[in-house]
Length: 319
Image (cartoon, rainbow, N blue to C red; front, top):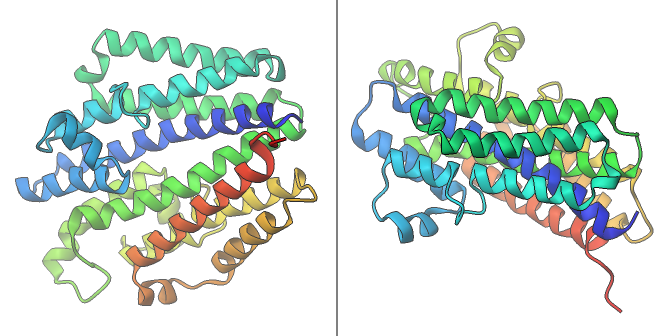
């Protein structure tokens, strides 16, 4: 496959997944902002979201002080923000258009319709009227895109590069989503927290789980009250949790194997090593290291893996 084609397919899927995960992160803050809490705690949540997305400097340059309305607008419909939902859906559609002949009609029409519909919804102020419903719609369109892709695309290199983009982005965003929690609360609830802290924190962890469609899964797996260390274990180490770091890296490794070339051996080794650490790791070791430190290191390694994939497969060879 031409590296240019692989690049468009890879980034089409990454941008679609990024739009969904931006919606999920916003949904966490939107839900927790509705809970009884001080204004200072609520503000930390929005600042944390911008910080972990590496968008705080860009936001403050445009809006100055952080507030919920401006952050939501910046992350949803600000075209100057390349990570906003509107920018991501546009980029996904443009990448799809560039490789229209490689995609099935159903995949192309799904991407195109999503773009046209999000423009209409934003122009009609549907986001302002009901942010929760709009964010749910973004997540649904991403689900639809993945389902149509798996249901209609030939199982070949095109699909493998699309899946690579999806799961590399998902690993990155799940790690960021977990980290948002700690930026927002500025506290380590894995220690000996008071009973009042535990009761207060239950609702925040519930919002985290619901944002990754993990609330029912948590209940099924652990059959117990929500505990922070188990939430972390579910989203980091559980191979059977679809949005966990382990499940995402499994997909990255298997799809890398399907497109491997003579020059990609080192990239495959790095991906396999990271996956093996998740497979044989324990939550106690991670918490002893510190969850924020662990997630920061994981994000660095995922970013390095993305750069290696780009170098090996996506960037045109220079003469």
